[in-house]
Image (tube, rainbow, N blue to C red; front, side, top):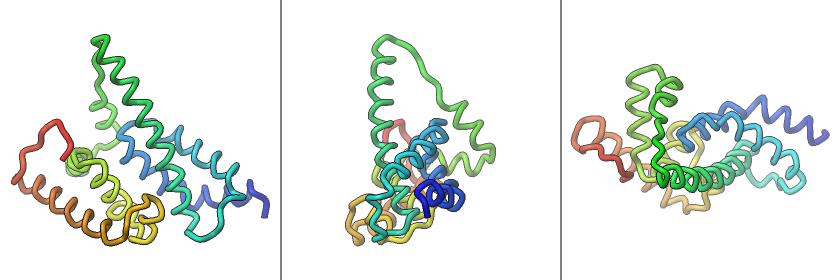
Length: 171
């Protein structure tokens, strides 16, 4: 099978999962553009795919690396905008993506988690990757992943049941 055909098949099978990962990870509307970038990069790198992991895991790993780079670029850009006193408002964009109030609330709580907690919740709780797959994507140890997921779920429960006060900083 030719590389383009393989990527087309993987796109039809895994694009939704990769897209959902990117939406939660990036917390903005760049996910669609980055999704295309993931599959382009996968097509160019397919010869290096050794088949030791599931294709979806490999694609999410590529998405994660691109998202990390994008987040760094966005942070630098945001810092520049703040420096010249421009204001930004992503809340209306987020709300337009999510119209269900309860889902929006959970989405906001997930975004209040520390980056590590948030990433594990997205990969395990939303995309339903198993611990081994998450270890491949993130490089974290499997025991650490399970513990982190447990702690992140507890933080989300605390938020949901009002035992914690949400601040504008990650926990």
